[in-house]
Length: 195
Image (cartoon, rainbow, N blue to C red):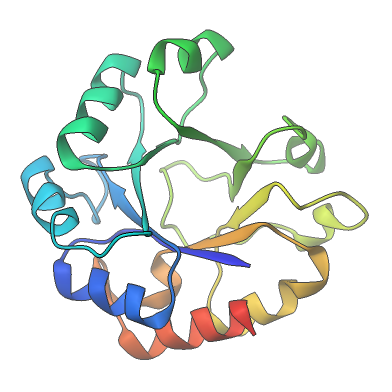
């Protein structure tokens, strides 16, 4: 399984996550998040990262033009769209992107089955809540294009192997405090996901 460590706020955590084996890092450009990062700080971190690591920019309720400009300015390589948009939004975006489904019911996980998508637990806020999805919703379906998020930690990620998820996305489950990653939890999470 591929692993994204989300909510990166400093270079130390970014390099530690990469060293531990992360495939992608997430940068939250949503001002209401405790893991929010400014464009300048994100740009400074990304400028110091090694190659072959996906840099994912997370957005909530922003225009396609703004999202594209932030990604280009900071050096992010993928835009994570954490809010409901129409199909023509992606046409206007002109940038590699990942749709997020905030699932409330089993039927929600079946949406856009032909596309790579991130499925997170629905909560009033956006992401990093630690709220877990009902894993039984994924039984008997093709999970090969699903990145699972929501309430994951080193203990729970090991139980996901049989589902065949494309990847997993974690933020609060590997934190020492909001916005600060724990090397122990990050290493344990990635080791379990890739075992």
